[in-house]
Length: 213
Image (cartoon, rainbow, N blue to C red; front, top):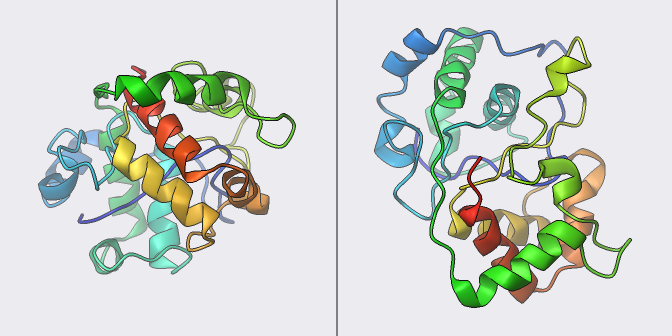
């Protein structure tokens, strides 16, 4: 499954009609994930900074993003053709497998990490830029615990970010800022990223990669 695939950021996904909880088979997903491993790593921890890590991601978020690629709500020259032949069961199985894998924290650049931590934990010129922690959690775990209070995934589901590739995180935020990515609910990520400088974005991305979920 080649190429850039997610992001993640604040509330970034809308559960499409008919897409209920991901209920895939992780063992089947492992077999199907062989081709994905070439880019995203066999255990979902990508070694290439331009491609996202999928390990430990919220399964419903993976499902939604794959369906977005199939429906052309997201587009990538590598990912889009890879998703075309996948059926619902394939998508659910892949989500079950990758979400069950442990994520790994990355190495952050010290000169940027402190600035990124400030924005992640406290925001910037609030309420213009709210703190990322409010939706994505103190360790970047996202809204993984939605099932404790809800019977079905919420329309807005904050994905897991901790340990994600910093280059990839920055690319997605910049894409939101430039409006070249637009599958965020209610323009939330486009609005927030538009109020961040490119330096802010690079700093937040470095802090996020250092988090261990």
